[in-house]
Length: 473
Image 1 (cartoon, rainbow, N blue to C red):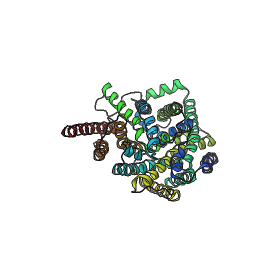
Image 2: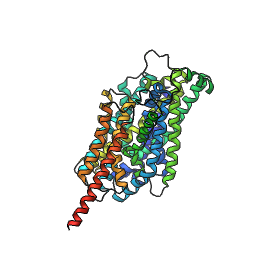
Image 3: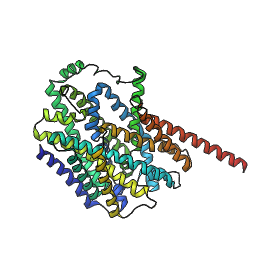
Image 4: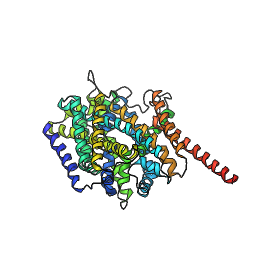
C-alpha cells in the first residue's frame, strides 16, 4: 500500500516539477501561465480544483448521515455552476485580458475603468483569510486519510501536504498546479470508480444494495432532516440554496483564475465540456459511495463519517489499490490546496499591498509563508472538512459574486457603494450561519441576493443623482 502510494505521489511530483522548464521569471507566468493554457487542460484543472478533499472526505461523510437527500447538493451545485459558466466566465476572461488583471479581485476593482484600490484591498484581505481556511481544510482531509490508512499522526499528513504544495508552487506556479491537476483528475476518477465497483460487488450487486439501503430508516427520504417546511416547498428551497452554492464558483479566485489563464484562441465550449463531464461523473460517484458507506460501516461503535472512504478502502481492496485510493484522496487535496495557496499569494502580493510585488523571488517567499500559515491553521482547526469548506466557499462567493453580477449587467456604482455591497453580502451570509439557518437554505443564497439587491439600489441611486445633476446644469 505504501509503495503504491509513493509511486503515484512521485508521478504527480515529477509532472509538477517538470513544469519549471517552461516557466518564465515574471508574475504573469507565475500566476497565469502566460494566459496560454489550452481548453482541455484548463477544464480538467478546474474540475480537479473544485472536486477537492471536500468531495472525497466531506460529501461522503455528509451523505453517510443524510442519505439520498444529499442528492440535492449535487443537483443544485452542478446546476448553479453551469448557469455561472454561461453568464459569467466568458465575460471574466474577456475583461481580464482587457484590463490586464491577474486576479479576480484586481479585475473587479478595474472593471469600470477606474482603480478602486480600497475595494481591491478589502476583497483581497477577505479572500486571503477565507482561502487560508479553505486550504487548511484540504490539509486536514489529506492528513485524515493518511491517519486511517497508514496510521500516521494527523500532524504528519498535514506536513506532507504542505511540502508537496510548496514544491509545486516553487517549481512553476500556476502552470505546475494546472499540469498536476490534469493528471490528478484521472487518478481521482479512477480511485472513486474502483471503490464504487468493489463496494457494490461486496454487498451483492445493485439489487441487494437497494434492498439494504431501504432497511435504513429514512435513508431513501428525499426531504433533508431538520427543515422547517417538511414538504416540497422546503426541498425546493433547500435545492435552490445549493444552486447558489454552485453559482458561487464565480467568487472562488482559485477556480476563476483558470478561466483567466485560458488561451483566448481556445473554445470555451471545449473547456466547459471537459469540466462538466468530469464534475458530474465524479460527484455522482462520491454520492453513491457515501450511500454505500452506510451499509458497510453502520456497525462502527465510534465513527467519524468523514473517514468513511479510507475505511471502506481498507475493508474492500488489496493493499496496492488502497494505495491508489490514498493517492486519489491526496490528489484531490493537493489539486485544491496548491491552487488556494497560489491564489492567496496573488491576493497578498498583488492586491493587499499598496504596491504590487513583481520580483518572483519575493513572490515565492510570500507563497511559502502562506503555506506555513495554512499548515498552522490546519493543526488547530476544530471544524469538519465539510463545514469548513462550505463556510469558506459561501463567504468567498458572497464577497465577489454580487459584484461580478452587477458589473456584467452594466450597473455602475462608486467605490464607497461597492464597499457597502461587499460588506452587506458577507455580513448577511455570516449572520445566516450564526443563526443556524444554513441548514434550511444555504447561506450563500441569502448573501448573494442581498448583495445584488444593494448593488441594484446603489446603481439606481447613482443614476438618479446623475440625472438631477444634469438637470441643474
